[in-house]
Length: 70
Image (cartoon, rainbow, N blue to C red; front, side):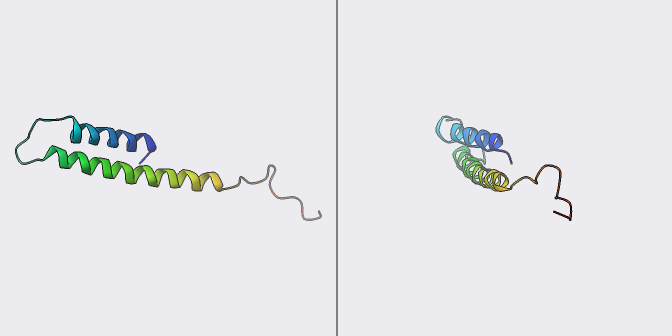
């Protein structure tokens, strides 16, 4: 899940939780909003951790390894 998707889930969840007053039979929209926000936050944390891990890797030196005689 990308960071953009996580932010989208958090935004949709917040809208469902705080702005929607409609009711649907058998579904509590506020609970769905909380679930979407939690999933979005978890995805955001995982995405940021993966980005930090990827940025720590050092690229290989240009041209590869030096010849054996050096």
